Amino acid sequence: ELKVEQNPLFLSMQEGKNYTIYCNYSTTSDRLYWYRQDPGKSLESLFVLLSNGAVKQEGRLMASLDTKARLSTLHITAAVHDLSATYFCAVFLFEETSGSRLTFGEGTQLTVNP
Amino acid sequence: EAGVAQSPRYKIIEKRQSVAFWCNPISGHATLYWYQQILGQGPKLLIQFQNNGVVDDSQLPKDRFSAERLKGVDSTLKIQPAKLEDSAVYLCASSLIGPRDTEAFFGQGTRLTVV
Image 1 (cartoon, each protein chain N blue to C red):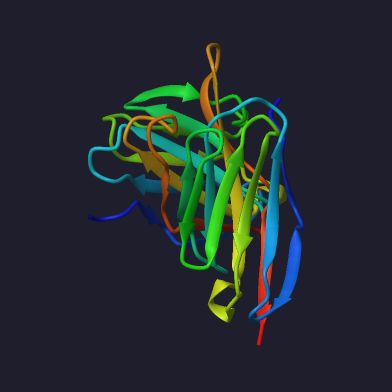
Image 2: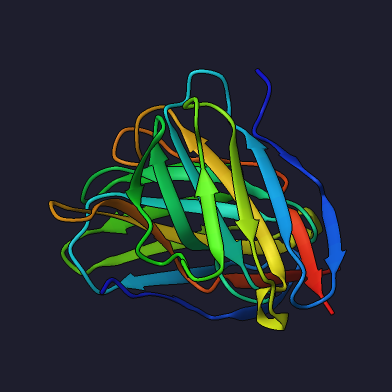
């Protein structure tokens, strides 16, 4: 069974600081997604990483994927308050017997303080 | 482009009652998912449809949960009878073909409280 683990689960940081959220998964996959969720809201797609070594950047967020290490990172540069939200990684797994499934991590609740 | 529509947004029921949720995916999206998100946790897949056929329902508690997508478009998820532990947000998502080809887009969710 695929397990997806994020750390940290809770992150409180000051504006202007840098930090990285980690997403480890237990089974080989070459496809990973990062989502953002604001309180009471649905999930917003941030990044789709489709191959080993993939790196994508949008504003102050940069995501990368290392399929050999089964690790993805979400790096935050010079954090601002607007980035406060919960961030989820989700790993795609395709199996011949059961088809495809997207499995989510527990989420990292990020709070950026002024 | 209209997003994934869900209703109702909120529902409060007593345990042992029944409840149904409705989802209208993005036009043209063949794949539809229902996820359960318990407070403080990541979404967990309940059931996945490809057009009107079930692709994966291995994590659906079939003794009380059911879902259908009769015409390959809208879908309903039903809980009968509800238990306290069913309190969660139920998210519907859709994608063009499947997560292998494109990402899933999520609706606003239905927040269910069972008392």
